[in-house]
Each structure stands twice: as C-alpha cells, then as structure tokens.
Length: 245
Image (cartoon, rainbow, N blue to C red):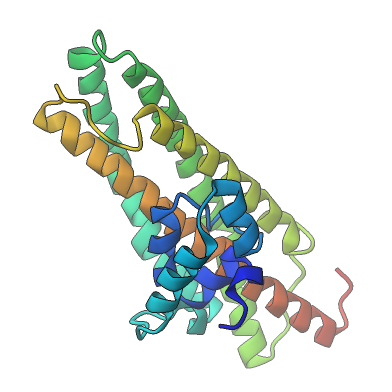
C-alpha cells in the first residue's frame, strides 16, 4: 500500500482487517471515525507516524486468512449476523448479570461501576434494536439486491428510497455506540481492574474489553466494506434498470 500516511485509516483496515489490532494498540478509532488520513489520526493521538507505519507494514506483509474485502454483500451479511450479531445477543445478558453483581458488591468502594452499568444497559437496548433493524429491513434488501443483480430480474424500489438513507441511520447509530464505549473504557481505566478486584471483577472487565473489540470489527465490516459495496451495487442496478431513486 503506497503512501500510508495519506491513506485513510478505514481504507487501511478495509484492505487488511488485521491492521485493526495496530490501531487499537495506539488508541486510534478505525471504525466510526476512520475516515481521516493516517497522518492526521497520528497527530490527533500524538502517535509517532513512522512507528505505526512500521507496525502496519509488518502486518501487511503477512498473508490474510479471512479477506473480507473479497466477500460479496450476501456473504458479508451472513458473516456479520452469524458471528457478530450472535456474539452481541449472547454476551449482553452475561455482562449485565456481572455488572449488576459488581455494583452490589463493589459499588460503595468503586462508584464508577454504577455509571458503567448504566452505559452498558443503554448500549444493550440500542444494539439489540439496531441489529433488529438490520436483520429485518436493511440486510434482507441487500441480499435481494445481490440476487436480483446476479439473475437480472426486476426488483421493486424500496420504501425507504435510496439505500444511503438507512445506511446513514445505521452509521449514525454506530457512531453513538462508539462514543458510548469510549466513555466506558475511560471509566474503567481502559478495562484495567483495580488492585482490590475479585475474580468476577477481572472477568467482567476482560469481557467488556472483548465486547468493545468485537464491536469495533463489527462496525468496521459494515461501515467500511458492506455499506460501500451495497451502495455501489444499488447505484449500478437501478441505473441499469432505468429507475429513478
């Protein structure tokens, strides 16, 4: 990849998702706020550009096991639902139970736990609603669009108009959750348990960190790969059919 410094962070991760670990290590957001050049992202975070370029180059030299960029929109949708949506749905009740217990046992000594619990409950409600909208509205349409395009049969224009409309809503909701988890990370000292933390405390923080990392990849796959592919396909299909959207 030429001129890494001027390449957008989101594009770097879209071409090789393993670079996400590098950005996470340096505290650079690659999913919701990744639409800026690497050089600018480094300036914002006061990170040494040459150091991170070296780390990224090392990752880029390693073969990719799962090349999400090569998946078509249908494959991406199925992967996102079966991997990330299922993870979110199954992990939320576990984390809610742990956080409630921590508040009861450790809340007096660590009052920040109450705010963490509140923020996670808000995230849980928002994410479950968000995934439902994707699974019952946007994703089925994307899969229908792929099938119609491949088999060249007519597809009715969706009630929501241009596909950019629901995508813009999903991206806005992604940004909201990204900010919410930045607050959770700050409150938990980047998921570092205090010295008096019990085993449940440590497990909870480790699971919260895992949840945020999964969410970052989840959002990246949608914002930076699935949505651009779907918008491009939508424009190609409806332009060819002569429909005005």
